[in-house]
Image (cartoon, rainbow, N blue to C red; front, side, top):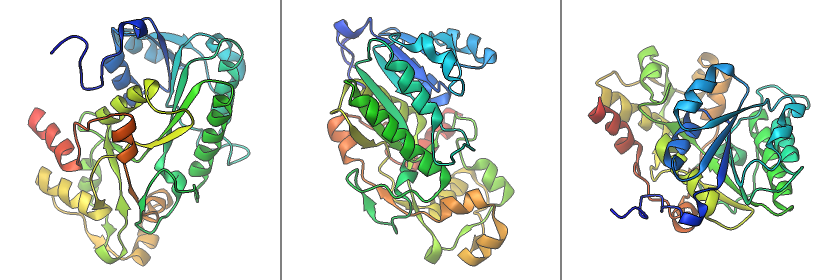
Length: 311
């Protein structure tokens, strides 16, 4: 394969000296860094001394700073030509619906020369419950959990930043999985025998393999119109219980018990119940057409099986 071709679409030579800042450089951020390594200068914001060596080994230059302490972010002004923002809001905040982290980040970035683009990793939870309907990016947000409200606030903050000049793109992300990701498969939940909803009460759920998510984030750094939203989701069309049944069969484990929604309300923790209260099917046409992303793992079946093959 020629050096200027790869599944992402190689960056032209004039882009190779660009500086990409990754904010929230955890599992997906490191996967994005691997996809970009050698083609751009990589920088990552971190507040954890324990991560410094791992970032350096990944070819990333760490910059110390804390999104919860705005005065530590001054060094970010003018440091990058493109920004990938994957840091989540804090779990508890005051006011509860605000994401102060994203506000602090964009204010710091706005203090000097602006980046050409910023990609923000949001969540499909901003839509709330859609009754199992197929959802495009044109659908209005309707968050019904505190964490979804905070994501909507973050999206507003990056859109404000986009009005200053940078091309801002929001990727809305469903459940992330990968066999080589910590907690990235249903194995542990299957071991615990955690129930799922019976079919008549079950919800549609959406997934994306961590590698495909990273590739889509990288593509969005260069592709797509400004102020554009993209669903980064695979082609699976599954109910939650069917997903766990598929995984159980693949791993040779017992399928989880099925219970009614009323019983689930009595037996399951509130956070898990919140996921069981939202049903939607994400349309990923825009991601494929405008970001030109080809999914390596178009279904959860192919993604989970890839881990079994490599193991």
